[in-house]
Image (cartoon, rainbow, N blue to C red; front, top):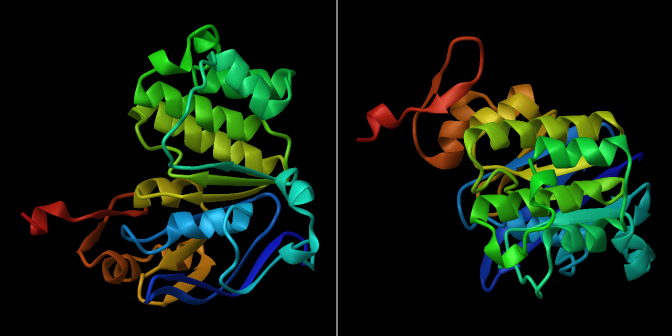
Length: 246
């Protein structure tokens, strides 16, 4: 299989089975979005795929080979991960952080990423002096700048204002169109509808579903996933119907 294949993957937290038998694939030139309520194993799944946590059950294959067959260093050079963790700054500036992540990658593509995220203007700033949104833009940019075939993004639009959320989604699409495998955890179903080719739904009780975005983002499926009503919007897509919950 050309890409990343997940076959029977299991995720357990303590005695609770979060994901029981996940089967899906993420191919080059596509965006796969992972959706689900809090605490269902979305971030844990990405960390397993990044090689930061051992696979608890099942198998993950890259280009037809099990991840177990790859040396840790080799897999680290194939995958770029941006995670929702507490950031350490180590006294670095933005430029130094990006150089560490990307090996001082330059060129029009790199410049386009930094300009789209408004990171170019922050280069001389110490990381410790950035707002949460500015730091998020730096970390997303650092992940995208690494020249890896697999890009894993954990809530990349968190802390971002609307303009930078849109820029992030456009960059995700651009990275996929350039041939990368892009997997992202999102919480906004409208954003998922805008960018996803495939969607994975995690319910947190062992159940999971995966398939084309058009099928997975049906209002009835999302209502069951989140336990709240959804409503269709003009032009396609759907929104949580908060009016029926207050």
